Length: 146
Image (tube, rainbow, N blue to C red; front, top):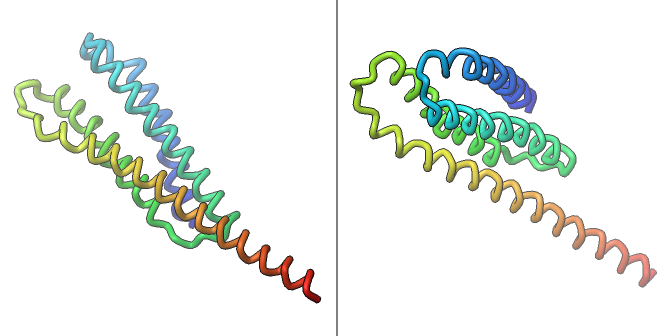
């Protein structure tokens, strides 16, 4: 769990650095408002999913959930969704003649991984809550019969 926390803090720090790079240099280099807008949008996804990953880990710890696959899905989503955009942008800045069509398929896959991670976390927490309610209900019914 500690490695996940460190990872998400590093991703948050990288978000700040990439935000500064985008706001100070990307416009100067490209003069492309769509690229700068996509850069900001990608940074928002990165930042909020890193914060969400920390929140997910906190809730999992509070609920004693040991499964980490939803967190892993968020991490994979970060690499595919955000990473593919950053790589594509870097390649565009380096050489605009490159054919980068295949990158467009990575973002939707990364987005689906985000959604699967969040729904998976909801399912795990819900299952834990239902088990706790059933366990508490059995304890109350035992006390009433005694």
